Image (cartoon, rainbow over all chains, first blue to last red; front, side):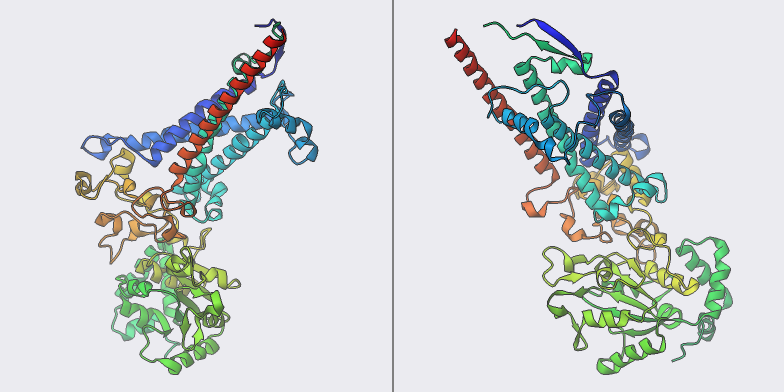
Length: 227
Length: 361
């Protein structure tokens, strides 16, 4: 292995904090959400007052959801106002044709094995930025809005229902919204697989210690191995 | 016709005591979710206002709304059609038929221009100029537009008139469309359900008569008094839901114990209706009370959200064997397979690059 020639502090503490809270919440939300949709554990015979099988899962889902929302808003604040060039929205400009230009094309070609060299970025590469926008930003936004609309259903006229209840007629009824929430929850395990694979692969191919960077914050540039 | 008679006049004429009249007013205000202070207002309205003329049209429908309506127990059907509303036209209940009856409709439309309520049961076919529903020699689409033009307000009875129901379920061969898609310039009250609860139907009429305005509506045009909450939130089996005690098949021990029907596909958690509050047939029971999961008949497109006995709807355009979870599992599997294939190509490429550099050296 080559010698470490440079250490770059990429992921500042707020970003790492967001990442791990988000990771834990997403997994929690997926597991509890799938359980709520298909509860499998039946309590032994007895009176309903002795058990809270379903309400406990729902409680965990809502608790994780509110932490997820707070964490998401915190990350949005950091992306808009944080003094952090690797975590800001500034560089991500999908509305501009130039953003889709050479860097994006080269990265796609690299992933498709159409190039020999691997472009290297200190922060996110353009394809990763796009994936995060679609899966994490759009996905989370939809799950939060639809989730809050459904959360408000048992208290008509309340906070959640008043602010987010418009989602229900928009999707053509409560069932349709539940269905969309359930179906789109599946993008998160898909993202998780692609994310873990891409990180491990970049670590093996580029040797930039991208995997450990989300714990330590540091990425490394490594001297080419003399052959 | 004595259309200028007030409710109180009619009650008196039919031998109903003032005590019973006040009871009726109190009961109606309870059904409307009004506070006790509104009872005097209702009494005054019943005593001073003439009966509201109602034209009741039938389009593409099964008459289950009328069937429900005639089973109303508070008040009974006789009270409603003889004493409460002036049901001037109803092609199902009228003794007259043909031109004789159609003339009555036109006469009422002229006499009470802008004052009558148009109650529509069923919806209209819009395909091929509406030929799939012909009433009295004209398409129902035309009749509906003509009668709606001078109405004070429209009540859309049932899931058909409110959302379309089975007529506009996929693939909707007759182009059936709910009233709100055909009539745009009139206030419309949606009273969904297949059929709606009879007391809900009479409650809506009484509200209009009492206050001269439509009841407060929610985002989907339904009276808040009856459609504000979900079946699930007022269900007497809710305790079993929260406890996680579920019926798993229709002949198991849990069925006999009356546990929650969630796993049997109960749509109570996504259905807004008053069944678990008012119940049916004078409070005798309601579907869940009789051991059957709610099918969500008062929700839009409930026929296309099936099967009735499963929680997760089928995704029709992908075939009847697919639902959200099957799609999800396949997509996750595809992502994993894609990652594995990409890893394999990366490994091969790396090994090849390694060989190349060795050869060079």
